[in-house]
Image 1 (cartoon, rainbow, N blue to C red):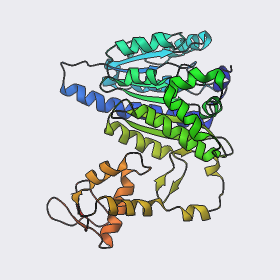
Image 2 (cartoon, helix red, strand yellow):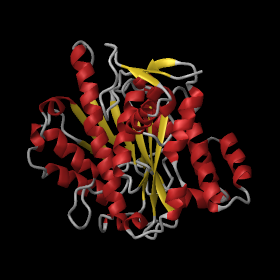
Image 3 (cartoon, rainbow, N blue to C red):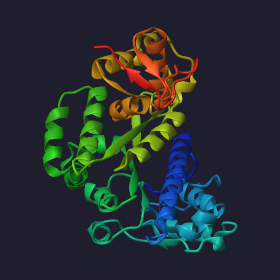
Length: 375
């Protein structure tokens, strides 16, 4: 199995993936630390755990995710005091290279807790260890080369505790090929669950590639949600020609605020917008000239407008409530809701006033604007 070829150069996809994780860690850590400061008698630690960490740098010298996280932490006094960082790679060459690279980061000794690097295979023992621990608030990043070591139990073992979120790399190409392969049946079942993987096989039989992908990702998201109130957000990566999906980055949280933050980050990293609705996709083909007709036919903001008119018919509520109630499992971001509500207001379909009884200021639509939909 190839391992280090991935680190030969930093492909644009890897840079985007690393950027998404590092940006989320930065925003997530600020939220967690602000809560910890209000409760000084509770734990004042936060953790970043990466179980498939790699050597720390690509062959071209570019920092990979672990170095971005640590470099960011060194620059911030609150993080320097709180961050516990744990890295692992089962390839001894990678773990040794990572240890050396970390030790050479300028200012690394400013961190109160020295980063720990392990060299272990990720299996049942590690999962059991996490299941039995009470974790401090942890951002958990799982980026295996294929699918070995990635399981629902592993993700759930970390998400059980307060403040813990997970981001994992879903190698769609390999998993898509593995679903019907008896040789890797146990890995597929550990990812989807036995019943769900059996059902998935029958669902995808004879489906075209686009429909097949939608079904596989939907089943994965439902499997993750089956363990409680969770928000799941996938971000897709296409291959160089933009024809096929190579992998997804999947975010899981128990908290709407985390979902909202990550949605905004993934929206900004998307390579295309249709009516200002992000694609939640990195597609190299988006940088090439394209035919525009199909994009003119796709009008997602019109769909959102019709959805809101139907869902909130006869109701009176504030803009933030409308956004929170409708937003989950849709491609829309807060700006899309403000644009649509502004348009509905300008065209006389809804009534809208501020808490002080004033109309919304021209061209804006604040979070607390009260909206009344007609019957």
